[in-house]
Image 1 (spheres, one colour):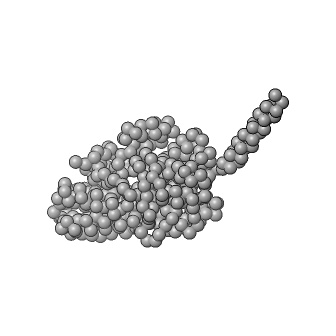
Image 2: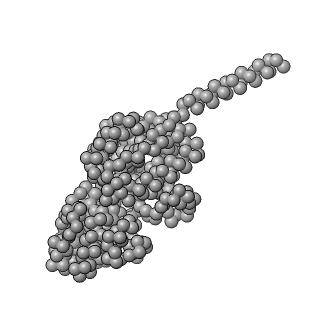
Image 3: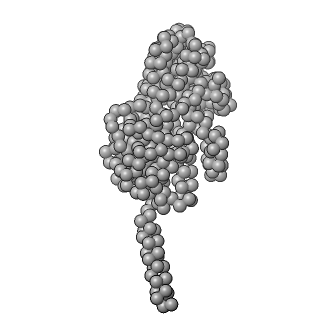
Length: 373
């Protein structure tokens, strides 16, 4: 009997040591949310923040990623490339190994070079410029959104098949994202022999676009595609309508948020926009939508669910690789598939999604949208 008691005590002690070792092995993993927390496109930073924070809260409440809890660090780059570089260096200096962001392509591209060199895993839920992953090979850089050379053709296909315009103007804001997606649309329209009579850049931040609107009128365009963000698109549409331009306007996901209605007013009615599918409307995400709402966060928008998915992929890769080492985690992400709120995610060798669907929506003056027919 004494021998049995002794064996029991040994077993309990061994279990306690094992439990202590497991607890000691678990760590707090810092994850940065990097993007515009201030500035003209802070709305997009808010979307990314809402998705990432909700994911972190849910993962931590469920016990963490293989027992490791996440700690969020917010970083503001104001969608400015130089500030994004400063933010990336700050993230590296603080020893943070995981980033959700950046948001704007122009900021994400220079920041990604730093992360790649320093072995930091970055997943952007919103940067769509192809050159992010095309310019050079990457091990640590990923997206949870499609590329402009997927988005542009989706927009052009709708224009070619549904609108059949007679004279097209393609405008852009001269920046990585805007000019890139505009060029992609123009290439597809050119290939289909749709007449693009004007391809021109405007200056982001201007308040008067009468010069370009005069060109739209003189060319008699009936369709305008704009590559860029909502502040410029809203002003161009409003001023164009005030000057009698009746053309249909279309833009990428960078114009698709409620503030464009605040800028353009009734002129926003009928705008076409390419956006990720409405993941918040997916019945499979109903419980997740309630989790957003419980924290008074809006689940509706192009970047909330991709941001949530980015955090979940990192957590699943930490659990799957049984490591918080970003090199092992990145390798696991490349080699595996992940079930997320945006669907089943698999990556190619560049860190791009193997598939992603952009949907064309019609925008309304009350800031709602319906799928375009």
